[in-house]
Image (cartoon, rainbow, N blue to C red; front, side):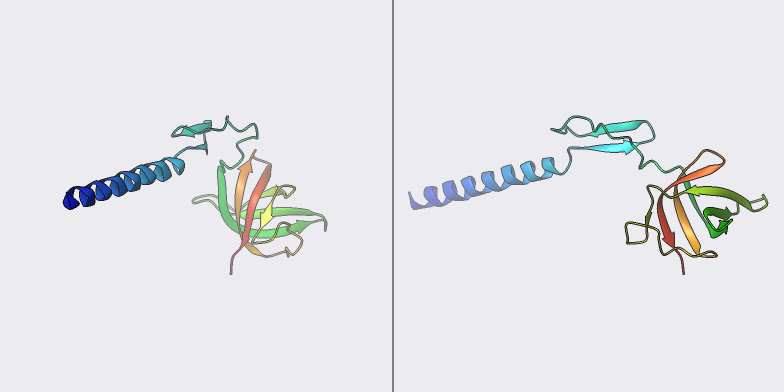
Length: 132
């Protein structure tokens, strides 16, 4: 009789533990992912698809250096294999630089990594990291 009670308690504890594990594992799997095709479900999210633009898809990731044109406009100079140096204007309006929320500490000739999207003339920068 006593052995049955012990086995019953062990069974209930094991069942609760497995149920909790499955519940927690399921919580971490249900969210929206920003991909090249827009917002994609991962699992079964409880929330509706985000209405914000999926701007974390960064097609332009390069390293190069900064120059300041006419003292106001930031430009980015970088290289691609087999091509001469290229330069594009930077749109820093939504950029996050290093660990701060703005890019006020940038200097000309800073060696940086840019993450954003380019239309061929201007790079919309989302992340800018100074390299050593």
